[in-house]
Length: 174
Image 1 (cartoon, rainbow, N blue to C red):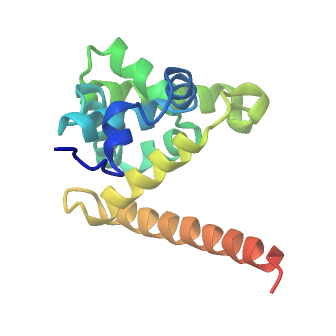
Image 2: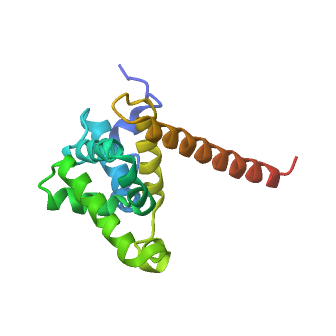
Image 3: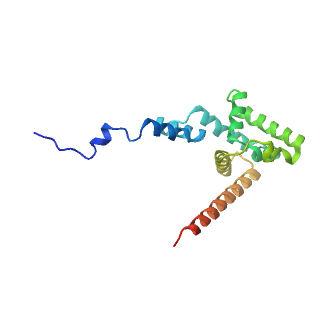
């Protein structure tokens, strides 16, 4: 008795992508995307991802006077470095990161934030600040002024993305 071939037989006997394609796919993922993929596959966030989220929360809990320089210069790469320096203690890392940017701003003034004097921000950095703002906007432990800043940042982010989308849609032929 012959069995009929299923259209899904090929899916079980051949990989859907080649190892080269998988390597290429992995090479273009950002560090944040790699951590999120790990969390998705294994059902749990990595310790690094948890520590970064807690660092963001600790930065939101800092007094308002200390937040400005940090938010203007924050990068994920720096956040990781400060976490490593402080043995993955998010509270200590937040304090050290704030001191770093306060001293940098005090010594260099506005030049502390100019592109030629800082590491270029990536899309991950902007998304991280956006995520930080989303968390701060609803965290009852965060002071009112920070929640106000967070809501304003979220509004600006959303407006910029809407304007960008409208520009892209205008380019599409009717």
